[in-house]
Length: 71
Image (cartoon, rainbow, N blue to C red; front, side):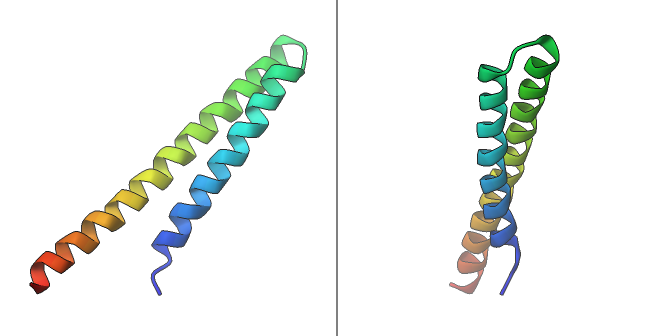
């Protein structure tokens, strides 16, 4: 089995967790350093989500092209 779909799902799950943690830190902690820490966690979540989404879409495109070539 190809590991690419699993990696995409793991990246999306990590993005959700990092985003939730970043939002929690940003909203509840006081101080400029904690605001920056929360914002950075949200940025990391965005990068992970984009990576997972790209992998997911590339897999879908590859499967569509393979079906087209077989037909």
